[in-house]
Image 1 (cartoon, rainbow, N blue to C red):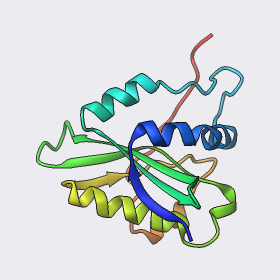
Image 2 (cartoon, one colour; image 1 turned 180 degrees about the vertical axis):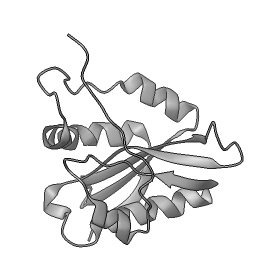
Image 3 (spheres, helix red, strand yellow; image 1 turned 90 degrees about the vertical axis):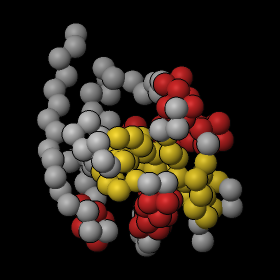
Image 4 (cartoon, rainbow, N blue to C red; image 1 turned 90 degrees about the horizontal axis):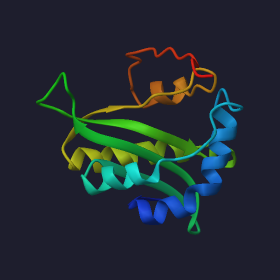
Length: 151
C-alpha cells in the first residue's frame, strides 16, 4: 500500500526525473518543438517563498506519483488562499484503484490545515480524468485553449 507525504523539492525532484519523463511522453503536445526542461530555480524560489507544496505517493520508497501545487492569494479573491495545481501524475500501473483519490485527498487535508480554501486542478482534454474529479466533487469551471505560435 502506498504512503502519502508532503515533501520538499530537494528530495522529490531527484526522485521525480523518471516519472517526469513518463508524464511528458504521455501528455505533452508539440513535443518536437517544446522539450521537457523544468525551471528548477523557479521551483526553488517558490518553495523559499512558501508557495510550493509537493505531495507524493511512494511504494517502498519508490516514487509512484506526485501532486504539486502553487499556493497563494488569488488576485480576484483576496480573502481566500488558493492552491492551483502545477503538475499531477500517477504511474500507469497505479491508476486502477484508489491511489489517485488518496493522493489528492491527502493533499486536500494538508492544504486545508495550511489555510487553503479553494483548490484548482487542471486536466488535459486529450488525457482527461473527469470521472475522478467528479468523484472527488470538483466542479468544471474553465476551459483553456492553447496554440503554438513560435517558430
